[in-house]
Image (cartoon, rainbow, N blue to C red; front, top):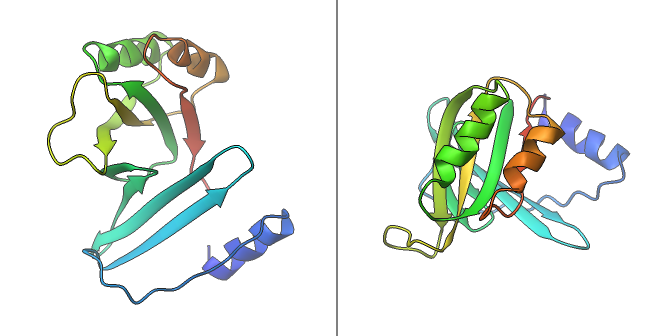
Length: 154
């Protein structure tokens, strides 16, 4: 889909679109940032072309990552403590959802390995969609803020 078509679809849905171009140098061949401003919360996602035909999500809010965009993705902000990944993976497995890729990202202001007790985010690509019931089970885990399912199908 062309960028102009996407912008038109967003505007038709009543979403205000503001395009800002920058000539600031980055570490990537090209990058794009999307900021969503709502009444309750603001979010930002940055994508980049890190090499020819290699696309990555490189930032989600304050979390630095490098993960391949997939159709089905699960975002799980959580307290960094033992067994968190195992608990989330266990729920997905019990609900017959396969994890195809996974990345755990820390806040961008961190220079060293994340400390126990800080908030990290699991970015999980799955082979299928994730049902609301599965999200509720994950969100109910002690230490999980709120699991979100993202479908990147256009």
